[in-house]
Image 1 (cartoon, rainbow, N blue to C red):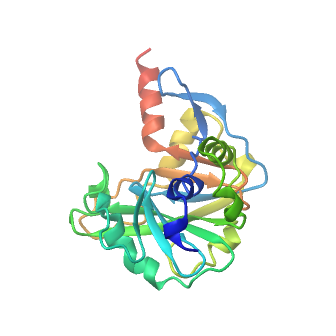
Image 2 (tube, rainbow, N blue to C red):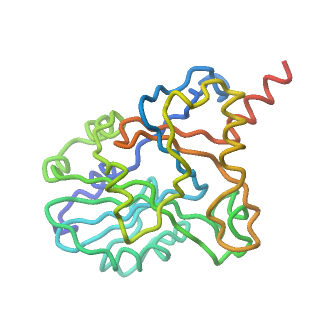
Amino acid sequence: MDLRSVDLRALNSLTKYPSIPTYHLLDPRNGGLQEEAVAFSGAVLATEKVDGTNARIIQVPGGGWVLGSREELLHARGDLIANPSQGIAAALKPVAERLPPVAGEIRVFYVELYGGKIGASAKQYTSDPATVGWRLFDVLVLRDYAEQLTWPAERIAAWREGGGQTFLPEDALTAQTAFQLTPRLFTMDASELPTGIEKMDAFLRDRLPHTLVPLDDTAGRAAEGIVFRSPDRGVIAKARFQDYARTLKRRAKR
């Protein structure tokens, strides 16, 4: 694939990471949590949600690759100048160059880049502004990309947010050898997941008392939360400490 002839706006939209719902649904009126929870069945895998910035390595047939943030493309193989936004290109270019090429598909590696000067929680992972880490949390595979790259912007956005993207299931994700994954915490039956807000708050504090991915001994070590998913990734939701703390604090004032 010749990236110079590709509609990069379409490529960017096709490969953006979709929104993940919160485990307890957010109230659009005030941002607090509601009692309604995402319904899981069967086995549920829990992984640590690392607090950094979402970044993409987009591999295209023919050995090309593009690096991106959550919202925009930043640098491609052979580019003279890379957008320095959040240090994504500097950190991930060596990683992209080591990946084996793909054929017949576009493959996107989604990583959380964290530490350094990335976001308000950087010091929970390190106090050194020059130290960053990254963990893989999902891989997207696009096999019908030739047609999809011709779609209008509205169709791509609706397809993406409607669950049209195909992500690797857990067994294929854990088989990736070029990256470390976000920490796998536990697997349990869906019937064991707390459904109440107060119980989920206690559950989070019990199961993830601190981050498992500090970058050095200077880290504050507070964790952001847990991502729950079915093994086939058909159902996925996130539970963040701050959402539960904010909701319970608001309730206590009533």
